[in-house]
Image (tube, rainbow, N blue to C red):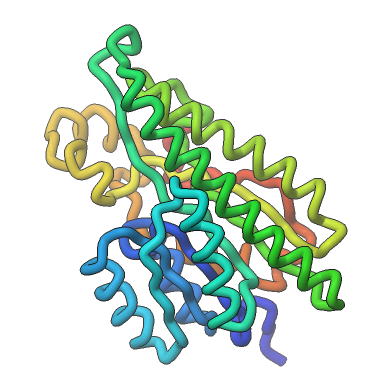
Length: 260
């Protein structure tokens, strides 16, 4: 008999920032595994392209223009998604922005606030509304759910000139652990994924920099940039019944960079 826990048929996954990069890599894998998918993104063109890609797997797909830094948009978006899709089983808080400075002493308050509003406030709003839905479901006799946050290697590594970004990525690990402890009684798991150097729009400048590639990517034991597709497996695992007793954990996916 085939092992079935990785089958996501009947489950609905919502991915913030899911119209490109790591978020789309996760969403695509979950759709292939049988999940219906909700994508949140602020770029209409990318939303449409992601929708077409995911529908090719034969799944229901819904896209919403939601800015996670806007509390009311998150509240309304989560309610609409749950109503139209019937349920939400997995929520991946993946939306994020970068923003650094030439040095910490030159870091602008404007950049600091912008990074925190998306990378920390946005995760807080998203998971709070997801938990409302999942707790309500559990109270009605339908427990379960999975919350996943995209943190970063910068949460545990020294990210010079990126203190705001690193701070948010460290904070969400603490947030996810607190959520995990409180919501296990409802059958809800909460885990963090920490990507290393991944080829996405956010890292395009570094990808185009030969010096960076020579000094940093050559230090990755796999000797390559990570790809969005490298996060499909962990998304399917954490969304599936295979991870029903796995919570409060952090998964470092960096090609071995941190241990080399």
